[in-house]
Image (cartoon, rainbow, N blue to C red; front, side, top):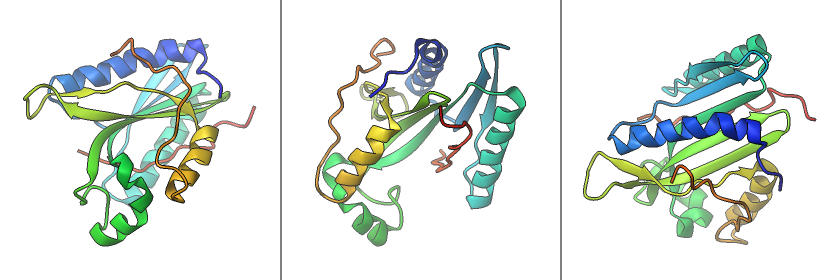
Length: 193
């Protein structure tokens, strides 16, 4: 499992910090992609519209267009989402069938999802969002650990098949920084190395 190169970490850590600040101040996160080029030191934010499938497709096209226009080195996405409690992951299909969506189920948990796509690989992270103290609006993000997607694909296949209940991670969490729910993928923006 490869680590995120330092140049990318230097760029995304402040963005993660801002996302945490928004949540700790009681705000929600607008789903957003940051498209950047290191040579020009240009980063363009692209808001992601998740109202319906057509809006998601338009958002993915906007991200792709920004990446092509900038000759992007990376696309970094941040969005709030729902996930299932760990002990319910193996029942995902059953829950979807019964409730129609994860968000409508009583087993949902709030998370923030991060993805970093580069020419060197793709890394993803999901962290639980918990209430901050007794506040109903202010929230905190737990430890964020990025893992490469090749590891994620193998591990999640085992979880969804019921062969595992969680994915053990041997990476270093990002502890220095210790509503819409889109499902937009902007993969294949970069050729394989």
